[in-house]
Image (cartoon, rainbow, N blue to C red; front, side, top):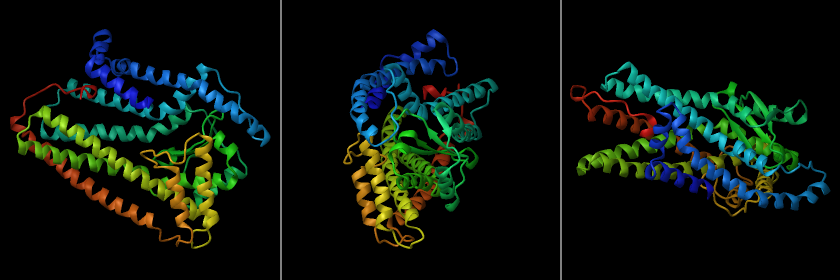
Amino acid sequence: WARFAALGWHIVCIFVLGGLGLARRITGDLVLVDELIAAAPAFALLLWSYRALYPIEKRIRAASLMRDLDEGRPVYAFPSRRRYVLSIARNNLSIMALPLVLILGWAELLDRAVLRLDIPPTDSAALIVPGVQLAGALAIFALVPPLMVRVWDTVRIPPGELRDGLEDLARAHRVRVRDFLVWRTGGMMLNAAVIGLIPRLRYIVLTDALLDHLPEREVEAVAAHEVAHVRHHHMVWLAVSVLAAAMLLGGAVSAGSRSAGLGVSAETWIGGGVILAGVLLTLGVVSRRFEWQADAFAARHLSRPGTVITEQAASAMSDALARVSGLNGIPESKFTWRHGSIAARRRRLDALVGAPAGRLGIDRQVRLIRVLAAAGFLAGLVLTVGGSVDKTPASDVTPHRPIPYAER
């Protein structure tokens, strides 16, 4: 709830209270400075919500302390309230905030360059400038992982049985990564992640608590799940799917608005609402199926060298999901938009037992998603480019000041 509240508060601050304009009157239109000041109230609300959670988390940690001692697991000192808030912000917010701030800064710098160079708003410029913005955003996403693993408190997994197993796993599925890292969270997070689109800048990260609490077989299952996201290019296809939905819906709304004779303001509000709804729906539907495929991939990996999914393999992945949700205090029935519920994922894993490893239903679903996403992306690109050219013939264009990214 805190993220939605912060988003709502940010919208109120910007559009109702005029926070961005106030920041610019105080500091001037400096690159990123005014935007960061305008975002400060929403950020402060998030930090306050983390501070309010501190006593609850402290009680939960104290309740599990004796169990960890009895089972011989490492025990971590619970941090002070200040360190707890900073740690949660560092671990949870930075993955979104860092690339977003960099992309915002890049877009604003590009707008200023267009203004300074006095580039005429021709059809070519209408296509080239967004293309350069997109290329810069993609470059930022590609280069962020090395920064991210430094923002997080990560260290290289040392040579040994664990590292050898992870390297063998990646090698078996022809997945290249720069390194395998332990994310030191002080025992506060059980999680794993793969970050990076480029092999030389790609990392697989496992938190300290996950390595402390999961048996070796379940750690391998979780790592295989992360490898699956790389092997099947899930991040790329998710982006293609979302862009396809946005462009197709944007083109449809634009065409419908012109036919209905709606003004620019009405088209903007209607289009924004429709595109947002379509993107969120696509994000949820596609993400959940990618998670199901990654779970199935892990079960298939653990079933090797057999040709069917074994009960032991499916159980290892299923038990890992149950253990992670339980230790994180998340009910198995809780539904999340991108991952679904743990209970549903476990049922799907149980249903895989005995299925041919090379012919799983979820793989067919994902292949269909890829075909539809690629076709939708190409169609959306044609609609977007065609609409951009048709709307403003070069002979009729009058010079105008480029609109800064933050004002769009």
